[in-house]
Each structure stands twice: as C-alpha cells, then as structure tokens.
Length: 263
Ligand SMILES: [Zn+2]
Figure (cartoon, rainbow, N blue to C red):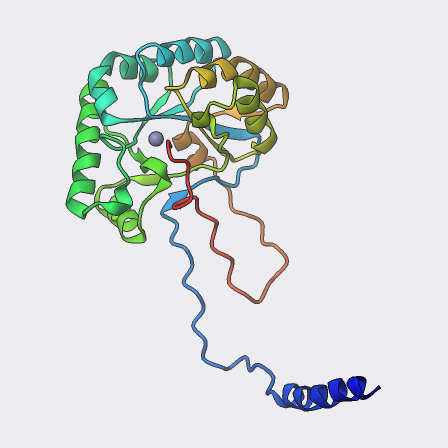
C-alpha cells in the first residue's frame, strides 16, 4: 500500500510537469532535414511492368559471352556496369553487347571504394574507364555505379554535375557474389523484384550465370518487361501524391555504406 502511494507521489509531479509543457508550436523555427538530392537512383516509379537487370564487374572472358547468348535467346536487354581494366582487356565483348542492344555503364577502373579517395583519384578512376568504353564502343557512358555503392554526398554532386553521370544504385540485391547457389540467387531476385526495380547481379560469377535461365523465364512468366537503365529512367512517371503528411518525405534508404562488398 505504502509502496503504491510512493509511486503515485512520484508520478504526480512528473504528470504536472508534462502537462505544463507548451504544445509544440508550428511557428517554432525548426530547420527541416534537407531532402536527399536526387543524384542517385535505385528504382523508379513506372506505369508498367518494367525492370532493369544490371550486371557488374565484367566483362568476363567466358561468362559474359554465355550471358549474352542467353539474353539474345530471350531478346532481353540489360545494362553492364563494367570495370575499366576488364573493358580494356575485352573491348570485343563490349562491342558485341552494344550491337545486341545492351547498355554499358561505368563501374570505375579498378573497383576501389571511391568514398575513401580524393576527388582527383575518383576522377581518374572514372575518366580512364570512360576512355576505355568510348574507345571500344564509340560513345561515352552516361551511367555510373560506384563500387560497393559507396560514394560520398560531395562525390555524388561532383560525378553528376561535373563528370556528367547519373549515379545508379539498385533495389534488388541477391547477394550473388557470396555464391549462395543458383536457386537462391534466382529466388531472391524473383521475390524482391517489382515494377521499376533495378536488379543487381554480377557477370563474373558462374552461379549467377547458372541462375539466369530460370530467373529470366520466371520473370517473363510474371509479366516483367526488361529494359536498360537509361530506358527505365525515361519511363519514369511521377509518383501519385500520397495521403498528405505534415513531415518532409523520409530520405530514400541508400545502400551507400552497407553495401555488398563485391558490388
Ligand atoms: Zn562491383
């Protein structure tokens, strides 16, 4: 009984204090968080079942041509984010990919963590790869995927405004670089892919290539239509206004930091 009374005594002043708190005033000067600048894309809103498959880290001498054969059978166009070193070694694979309707994006020269590099070195990583791609296919890439999705806010602006790239991340990550087996790669992609998704995979892992026949067939069965990332960006439609909320929209979760080590 006494104990209960003590609790009550304790609660009373707290309650009074709480009741005396002024209601939060709408005029209170409060700086809203700055919206995330739209310089990185991981998915887009589309009116249709469009998705973009992306394959990183190649081209691979054997696996990329195997993937190209399969994509040709399915008449599917994808986007390859190539590493400059590999692109310079296999320009013929890039040429074939472009001839068959695929898109080539820049994935840096040697796959470093750009966020830990100076502007000068970032520029060199991107420009050197750009030159290798341009010399192979005759046109410069306009999309960049930073290795590991890792890039600072400053670099995003610099890469977008100064170097002229759209920064492309991803929405669906099957973690294929961990070699979980083709069935797992496939089921993760099938489970997570929605209209407007950008799907991440790697054409340097045999299991990823093994996963593709079933993955492509089942995505087709679900009615998805495959486009390159640039095509997906052009298909973007405005998001219908949601029920009004008084707060600023939450920043899109970005995989910038906690990204796949091998992306
Ligand atoms: Zn990568």
